[in-house]
Length: 339
Image 1 (cartoon, rainbow, N blue to C red):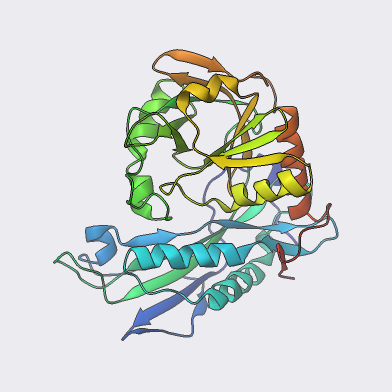
Image 2 (cartoon, rainbow, N blue to C red):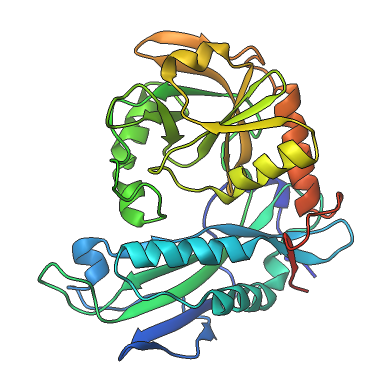
């Protein structure tokens, strides 16, 4: 039975639940892992994560489906992406099959915290890994913790599906051949000043251009961006953006469920007025529509308007969430049943 929580009023914030998962890496190997009710972490003041930001993370969700089952969505891709992130930061890879089993184990241990079907909420799952032993010289740590916390959440953006106003960022997010393609904590740390400044100026998010030429669209501080133009679903092709699992899933949905033509290509800033719809996509938000993009004071109005999600974006959102919630048949291998 679910906890007695006003699920509909949840924001996107942390709430301590019953159990977390933890596995330790020492002497060159991972231990067997365990569930713990201790939600604190104790480590050296000189830990690698504190000195040199050696940490990576993932994000996925567990849902209650229409039939009452608790499932999660494509965790194999999260496991694969976390392995790639760890390799890039010279961290030991947590085995992908163990990653999936750990996700299932921690969700089962917190089953009362999974929001009910139709509530609009979900159980957010945050796997993360960090260096724990003392490191004073610049080098990889020797010891690590892999942990998973879970917390029930509501919508990522306040106001739900209300179209967002975003600005072309004054700062760079990631350099070519840098770390923009992995889910490292350091990538998000550098975006904090930019997002605080954007909020002070009345914007919901920053849209980062490529750092080499500042002429092409890349992504926002927390999501990939998608565009609709006629019968085309257009997404950014770049080696320095995060390979969003939601975006890749939407590409499949667009082509195979909605019959749209999918284009993954470079998108130039001067093309933005040509698009009919736009949206930010990611695990947390799924899709949040964009109504206005501001570039150095010049307003670019997306024709879908500032009041509601555009019609094609709405179909994409409804189809993907329908798959996640069990209302629409999923492609093979997308849904992992937990209990």
